[in-house]
Every structure is written in C-alpha cells, then in structure tokens.
Image (tube, rainbow, N blue to C red; front, side, top):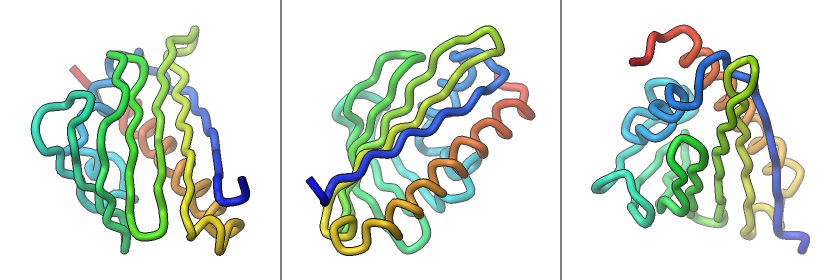
Length: 143
C-alpha cells in the first residue's frame, strides 16, 4: 500500500546488551541521550501495554509499549495527527559488543501526501537516534 513506509537502520555499539537495554528501557530519560526528543513521560511501570507521551520538536505522540523481550526487543506504537508509527528496537550481542537495529513502520495521510519528505525525515531521525545512543553508551559508564 502506498501509504505505508518501513525503514530499518543498524549500528554497532561496543557495549553489552544489558547496558544498552538499561538506556533504551528508561523511557523517562530518553531526552538525556537523544537530543531529537524534547520530553518523554511513562505513565506507570515499564511493561507491555503501558502508555507514554513523547514530544519531539513540533510533534506530540501518544504511545503504547507493545512487545518487550528483556535485553532484546522493545516495540512501541505511537500516534499523532496524520501519522501512526511503530518503532522496534532489537539488540543482539556480537563479537564487538552489540548490534542495535531500529525499525520504523509508519502509515497515515502524511506519508501518503508527502512520502519522500516524510521518509527522509524519519530516516534522518533514526540515524540520529542510533548515533546518539552509541555515543551515550560508549562514553558513559553504565552500571
């Protein structure tokens, strides 16, 4: 369908999955390591079905945590006016630390209307988010 978009990005981080997990699973502190996020507030415990609010620039997203597989996978579903996006973080251990994959699947009239511009923006945000995660995890001593 023309109104759907999927983008996958990967990065290698020289930390183990437990350390990366501790950063990604701490939704309330996403803005600390990811400058593209202005504010994130988790309502309740970090668990499947929990809701949170995410603000990034002019966008306010209402989100829900989908799947959690401890130290491996977090998937979230977020909605805002004209855009529904699912983000899945997958962490796998590797010889050099961990591989982190971020998959974004989006739909909505914004993608239908301005597909190339929306795809470019999502692509840029994913790259920026993964690079910010890498810098944060590799420079910070996470306990």
